[in-house]
Amino acid sequence: MTRTIRLTMAQALTRYLAAQMTEIDGRRLPIFGGVWAIFGHGNVAGLGEALWHERERLPTFRAHNEQAMAHAAIAYAKANMRRRFMAATTSIGPGATNLVTAAALAHVNRLPVLLLPGDVFANRIPDPVLQQVETFGDGTISANDCFKPVSRYFDRITRPEQIIPALTRTMQVLTDPAECGPVTLALCQDVQAEAYDYPESFFTERLWTPRRPRSDRDELKAAADALKSAKKPLIVAGGGVLYSGASEELARFSAATGIPVCETQGGKSALPDDNALNMAAVGVTGTEAANRLAAEADLVLAIGTRLQDFTTGSWALFGAARKSIIGLNVQAFDAGKHRALPLVADAREGLAELAEAVSGWKAPESWTDNAKAGKAEWQKEAAKATAASNAALPSDAQVIGAVQRTLGSDVILLHAAGGLPGELHKLWQAGAPGSYHAEYGFSCMGYEIAGGLGAKMARPDKEVVVMVGDGSYLMLNSEIATSVMLGLKLTIVLLDNRGYGCINRLQMATGSQSFNNLLRDSRHETLPEIDFVQHAASMGAIATKASSIAELETALAQAKANTRTTVVVIDTDPLISTGAGGAWWDVAVPEVSERAEVRTARTNYDERRKRQTIGN
Ligand SMILES: Cc1ncc(C[n+]2csc(CCOP(=O)(O)OP(=O)(O)O)c2C)c(N)n1
Ligand SMILES: [Mg+2]
Image (tube, rainbow, N blue to C red; front, side, top):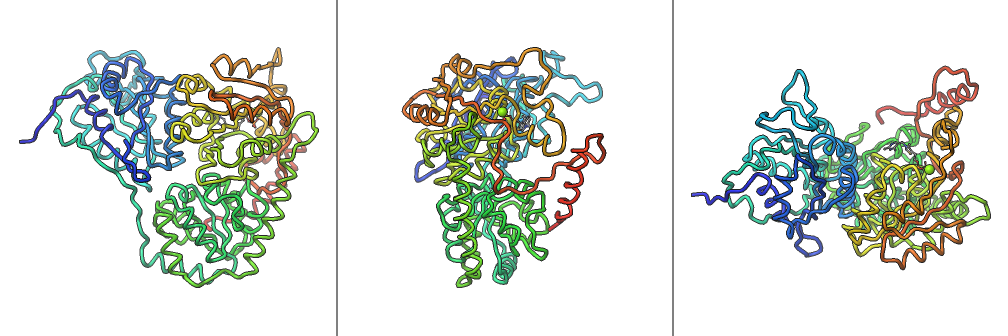
């Protein structure tokens, strides 16, 4: 007879989560690092009670904003290379919908996170409950239906025994390198508290090891043949290289074949910046070294990348008319994009197999030497952009230079939105794999500070440096208080250019008047003078303002010595970005306008669009 144990659905859920294990560097660890929770009537009595019982094996953390706690959970998974994750639970209604943006973020970035919003009563007796949205024509809809398009797996738990198949599927999705992303289990409030006789075996500890699919024989042969006939091959390394732990294999492959490597935002730090064949950033925010090779390449080996528009320069960057793409990706959806030759495999395994299949073959030496020379040129250019100057307001690039000089490449440098991603992609000299943490799939303002917290939880041994603009900071900063409360130190560098600087520059570049981006160009009675130092200090952070690059370096040296979250604020110039490097980005310009500047911008736009290729 099956031995059973009588538990509520919520107790069974937490007991199951606590029993899922992983092994990292020979250490057996719980695969869930914990649960972020903001309670309301939808989860406090059911799941809240269950989390209390499980608090030793599955710690609960309290945050100030549901989106932020999910950002922290997502960053935790990213900093753990998707080998460990967290869950986030909310009440029904606004708590739940506050998670939806984060769900979309995890969906885009292919990052595992378990979302556990409360849901309305399955028995419908007290309907409509507080925060129930009510749909006139469909009794099965709740606020949580918003999660469906942004979850890899969605289920609504309306009976306690349903969690057995639902959790089995949850773990499949979270641990599958091809499928992984957000899982949403909407937990009906009454069902959380309902008891059931669960089989004891359901709660046995289970060890999860990463799946590493090897390539298909025919796909491998086709890829190897294509590679061996290339004269100007280029590797584009995406986030998949990092998640698969393929950095060493990539370095070996590149050295053996002489193929230069360039990196997407997600893939940056796949190779250290000082690897002679690492051309670093590619695409809209790329280096000149990488982009000129991209324009000439006759074969692009795209590894673990989604090939988003910032990487491909909206498909106007990879110029050679007869170029081909090999898509080495664990996910067939990505591997075959733009009519690429698919090579569906784990990045590390696939690269090793490809290395063997092309063994002895090398790219023409002139191509490799040309790449190395281009890198040296770019390094000189980049050094100019990041050097300190006497300008009244420094540029973002100069601030980046100061952060790099003071804190080095061994930190985890984290950012997400604004002008910084472009500048950092080009200019930050990344160190070890994972030292550069960019959320640039969704580029979500407000990811930065909460994400920093999650990254610090994943890597407490590392200095986590968050670089953030005033706009992103104002959107979501409340987890500074949580970082102080949890003793998880962050160094936050806040660049205050008094507005949405990068969008203002984009607005001007598309011919429009500066409007509604910088504070000074927005409708106002009084121009706000926001005191970020006092604001951050009010949440318990150590906060200072630097009035020059020299002062910034002193403040950062102090921040390094601090054990509490430190915010260093510096005023920057909203109009400057690094001109060198970069590629065109397709942002649609109005076809008709009374403004001559817009008409000129449209003419240029039409010209640039001619370089776009479709489907290759
Ligand atoms: C949640 C969200 N809303 C809007 C945007 C569009 N957006 C991208 S950058 C940006 C401005 C960011 O301002 P700030 O953080 O001050 O950085 P800056 O551009 O000044 O460098 C905006 C509005 C976004 N990426 N995310
Ligand atoms: Mg700004």
